[in-house]
Amino acid sequence: MDYQALQKQYLDLATQVVEKAAGKGAVAEAYISAGESLSIEVRDQEVEALTTARDRGLGLRVIADGRVGFAYTTDFCPQAIDLCVEQALANARIAARDEHNCLPARYPEYPGLDLFDQEITATPVEEKIELVREIERQARAYDPRVKITESCTYNDSRYLVVIVNSQGIATAYHAAYCGASTFVVAVENEDSQTGFGLAYSLRYKNIDPAKIGREGAARAVRMLGAKRIATQRAPVVFDPYVATNFLGVIAPALTADAVQKGKSLFRGRVGQQVASPIINIVDDGRRADGIASAPFDGEGVPTQHTVLVDKGTLKGYLHNTYTAARDGVKSTGNGARGTFKTTPEVGTTNFYIEAGNRTPEEIIKEIPRGLYVTEVMGMHTANPISGDFSVGASGLWIENGELTRPVRGVAIAGNIIGLLENIDAVGNDLTFFGSTGAPTIRIAAMTISG
Image (cartoon, rainbow, N blue to C red; front, side):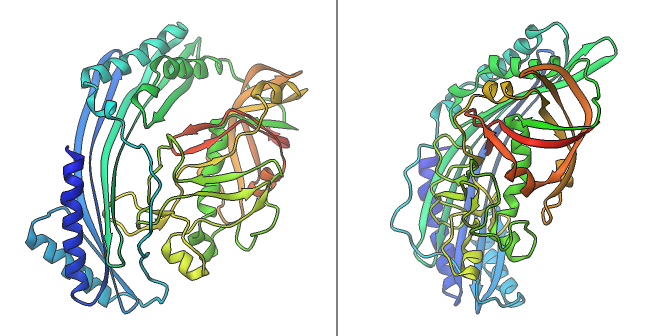
């Protein structure tokens, strides 16, 4: 796709659509997304699947008398556009009135971000296939006990976003990202264990097949022979991947939408201590090389660096235009819109716990007996309102400051707030898994049920 040419073409189209809707007495917003994607899967050095796809569409949101109507179309011919406008207006007429429904006004500027790596588009598919094969070769070469490839993949996406509204916003950007992953199984006697490696980036050169393959193999091999341990209370260390699993529960609870609906464990706690003083939690929509970075959100509001928890104190919530109007504050640029087929919700961008200044080895070395957790199961069962959780866990036992034997079949339980308050060490190894990131963190003590 020629994204530069498409950008001008779609800005013109979105402007025409907004003018049509506004001419019928509504405040209007047209959102266009267009893109293409590639997915490659390899097993035993053979290409099992190779998929390319293209997608485009226009979502039209109108507000008339405080009522929101929405419709979308993938057909950009004049007749289809007219039908989309009439459908959005008709939907508004039967919607409930809400005085907080509004669209953002024009902004003087947006952050300048480098989001389109030409190498992602220019690299031949054959070379990308070879990258996936190299991931598998590296995983198998790491240890002869790595015998099965569950999946070995590469995927990338290139896309264009255009937003025009009748309040003066008319803006666009194009971006691309790529990623690769592997899931392999190590087998020894009657035991088998799965490990994974993955990386996502805005830059093709950052996808290191050797690192991904060997990481997946190492995770699988080190868990061979894992056994249960006796129930006890001890320090627990979460590796970055496990810490991001907990952030997956925390993230929606920090959206103003959840708070306003009474569905957040952080409701009414702004200004209060909700975590250890060494914890900072941030959402940064303009982070360099962040997968979710963009100059503006799904409503045309500039993205920003938002500190949600500062030295353990809750500073605020994430907002889109609607929730900000309800609370009488400014949007934080978190109007999330994954597709042209939906209206904006409130969502995170690049969401993470800030890194500390200690190495993971230093953090583990101080523990006489404890558990280094590398995987948790059932995180989706955590209660987003109370914060209570009980999950299965596996990892490596720590003895006299050293990682010793693999452990599986244990459970850890508690409350998210209690867990955050009891963090007594934060690593310097902030690692992103997609758009969520965390460093190694240590919880002073938890009950481990064997």
